[in-house]
Length: 283
Ligand code: SAM
Image (cartoon, rainbow, N blue to C red; front, side, top):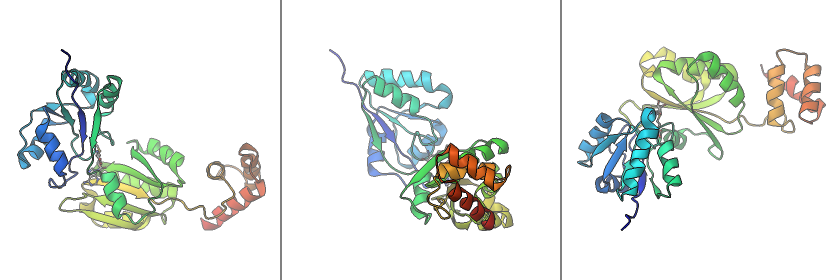
């Protein structure tokens, strides 16, 4: 007789405060046959706090394929498995993608147990427009690569959200300032839900000053939201054309730039020219 396959539950866990966990998440972690986690020592603390005795098994980015297949075998034998990460929602800049993909391929039911995420937590308090958001996770570690990534991403018509660690927070904010402009509006969450939680809201320059004036505030975990660029100057110049114009502006005279951009993106070169003049005036 064939076993009915088990269910793979993707369970969100706290991003700091151990009490930020839903009844359903606790119930699921309790009733599953196994909890697949990134770091057993880390998840053990959560389990001890909530008196959960389900066995733990390590599942992290380095063994995702091998460990993922083993989890699928167990699910196929009828076991129910909860997958968690160290903090927040699995697969959001965290492992889990491979096993979820394998589960779909194997026809195994995958069910979310929603809960905390640094991304959504910040957006809920940022005071920025959330009608459209772009989440980029971690930008590259190296400044040169981070700058070119930011050049591709900004200006952005959505609120842009990124994760950053304490090692690079100042360098990253400086890079954002260089690309977006020091007076651009942003919000940042530091140590969300933890004892030293701090929410920043203001220009990039103001946030940078707060951090440089107080080095203790450079420590911890950070999530950054950069306000969407409002189509201020010239709404008739498409964003992609604006981006090309901004790239060429330091290299060529405005007339040549507007000609190139106008023909490349099939838009009005006079409006591109006006866009360039407005940009220069605001610098
Ligand atoms: N899966 C997680 C989630 O749903 O938010 C994210 C995991 S990612 C490996 C870890 C990064 O998320 C940290 O480096 C930091 O940028 C951000 N983060 C996690 N917890 C945070 C917190 N309590 N406050 C601010 N940022 C946090």
